[in-house]
Length: 376
Image (tube, rainbow, N blue to C red; front, side, top):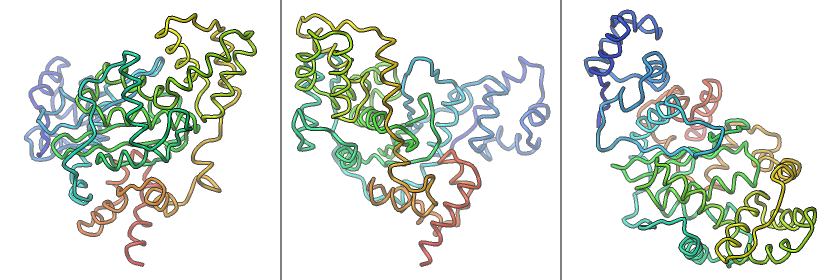
């Protein structure tokens, strides 16, 4: 469906500021005719300009764009100290709108997807859910879950993995979930410039969103995805074993027991701690007594390498290497579909820049690599 600017909202915002359309055009660095075309529904602004409109007029996406049933659904991880702003939402929604033409180049969608109809963060219900997922993945309760185990689940549920190199981020921009409800396709952006233990958590978190599409973009959905990810990576059997080691130990020995489990499973010591505490609370046992500052200090002192450094030597990789790894390791058809679109429609690097949220230089390199692979 063709996206249309919500001209009434923009006119109201202009009136409140005493501005004309020409003044708005000057403020966002665009011509008056282009803005006029937007207001008349003849054209739709690119993500960068849509974001500029949102910032200038202090309007959210739903105020800027007339809603439709096929509007992308965005899920950002709710995380303390990392506020999701309207700017984040506007940019992600615009990316989602631009992804729609790419869907026709993806493989045919499956009729059935795995779903959790009544997702719950209640301990026993959550453990049952993750046990069923582990059984489907053919891994036992004590087995170390690798991110490679999760890749097939995304594929089976028509979730297209999009590995990206966004640099180290200290906020929610390590993953982005864009659901296109009309097309029944989900794009999951995963930042490879992330520590392994965090990368696994992000993947498990995003898988929870795939299983619960009706909750995507809500606080309830984020709470469930966080709870699900921790339980999936470190289920009750593991938490019980670690608790038996840590409960009667000294503070330093308790930290050592948690760290040992974290290292064994390649997950964060914080994830281990939270799962052990959840187990103890559910069973009516005494909670571990730990200084949170010591816990976080230990976590920060034992960080693993970045996934991008482990995958690529040297890092960052060349465009062709990133494309090949996306197809080979992540079993993603994203660049395959993108290659077809470039060839069939003559799409330029600007499109890649917008849908991948990368610089023009990187987009141009990817564009050339995709066309070069097609030629050869």
